[in-house]
Image 1 (cartoon, rainbow, N blue to C red):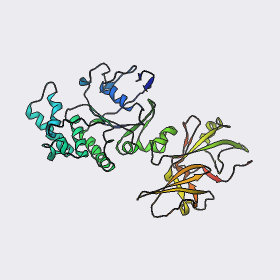
Image 2: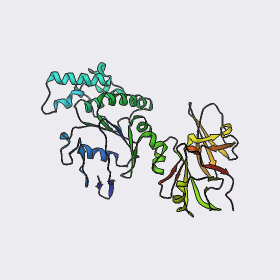
Image 3: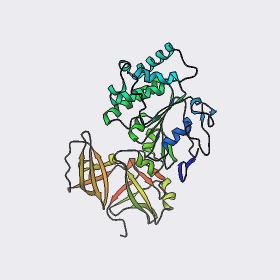
Image 4: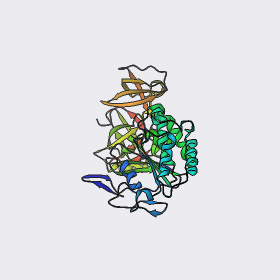
Length: 374
């Protein structure tokens, strides 16, 4: 499916299949095309090319009300003068044929029970907390029975604690509904914690579709690797060189050798140019944890976060980040032994595509010091 707005290609040949009763997350930065994708599914936008199928039926030309799709938008849309019960029941009054008053009341109470807002039914939105208003907005989308439910960044307006609470609620809700949910977010934590599968979307293009575990361990490219994780993955530019018939990735202070056979041909094609080594902050070990490593880096900044600490380090003019356990007091400007767990490392080619993901393979070897012949 493709969609253009003037000179902007919002969706570029996007092809997705979402399984029945799947919790499917679309993850990407602002401007990636996420909302355009949802609006095309529900029928508020018409694709320039491609089709939308729901339950095996082509609904591309169908009106939104005939697609059996409910949506929760980013901005909460509640009637301030109506009680929670009337807000929940309003979509049922617009339904054709309209359910009876008894049927509407039963459905409202069923949804209120599912969302744990039964005590709030007689309140108005002004007397609700942010999380309570969010639950009511979700309930308005769920009160009518649909085949698919769409969520457009529904938690973005909530504070951090409420987002954690609502993530658990949404996971519980989806299991009880036994319906298909498509959830759009820019927050990788939401996607990783909620989804059965994640689609990373950027620039209107699908970058990768797979499980949260696979997308973390084996990202398709540098952009996907950068999208998943906080702090983001460290990206270290390396030169691809060959000495005595052996390929290695060389840097001013380190060299990566013992490259797996499967990487040799794609890396040899990058000779004279470069590749990128990706090391996640949680795979950067400091001090005693670095063992007898001869690599030493200067501490630039320390960010204690309670359960973990972020340490910024200087590696030959580049800042890399380490994510360490609490309890060790690092000081700016001190030099620390540093080691990388290369069993979780990635190598990316010049076009950003992944050449190698270690995924537990410990064959890569880190050498410290200037590369040979330098």
